[in-house]
Image 1 (tube, helix red, strand yellow):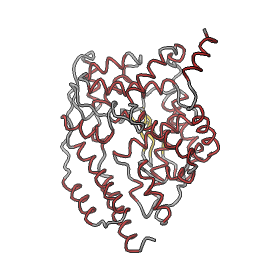
Image 2: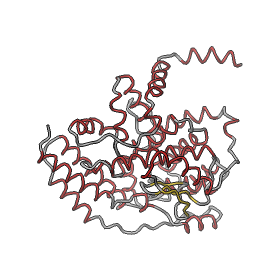
Image 3: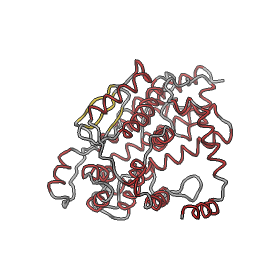
Image 4: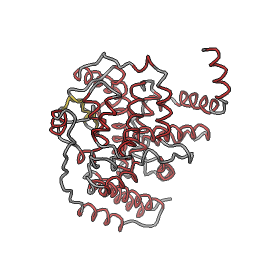
Length: 413
């Protein structure tokens, strides 16, 4: 049983780390002004963007993290918080190295690269993306992009209606914004929809499940954890799990479509091109082969080169986490079903966590440090559906598909 003195220390350091982490806004720091896109389009897509990043003074934040570490003891909870302090500091390493090769080194450590191996020890995100490309070559009907786009005002109204019942008095505002380059962004208080972005009806459902029911929900749940405030913080090393959880929510909710999967896979390929030496223009041309919308091709390219080196070799690798994280979260949930550990499911939404945090989070729950999350999406509440899905997945995984595919190919020929 955790003593009062130990509990007080854990809570105090957790608060310190939470407050410090909120001062490190990686994506905001790496953002490009609209003028860069304007100049690139004005050049006929022939002139490499010139991007300058402001100097970031990290001394005070590093000092605060060091102070937090000095307060820690030697319990497993202390070790966990110590690790979190270094995770937060890795974000500082990233943004203080913008524009040079060191940026890529830090990005690779935090987010990984397309050729990193998954937990099976052999599969890589790049291999998954390559295999997916072979499959989509046969999907001529699915390749057709929808021209039935919705206005940003319509998108905002649809999202507002659907999330009110879920969040009640904690419901974030949904606003149309000119100051964002991504199609949509979310914080605990606001979901922003880019004014001139293109959305289909399926995109709306994806946004609701991804941004609202996952990102906003886990943030709010974490900030309701009064004793372990760090669970309300969103720092770089959590991204793989958090984006994986958000993409899985799209998948299990039935709104993950062909276009969305293609975007995820194409980003992996685009990152690998940049690592291999392709510059901004070359990667932009690659994305132009994937969409007729030039602004979307630009945005996909910008995401890869923000913070990195425009001439290639040293990109920002964050966008592999959507695929990598999806596979990891899928396999983790599968393991829950295999082992019958259903008590762990809700812990995924108790705040902003990494999958590897689960053992410590479970112990904190037993000690009464962590409360059950209040905001849980339908797909997680309906455990019977999850069990049915993964039971079939486990069974079908044992099938010899080479033989069965040969049989069915004869029927289809």
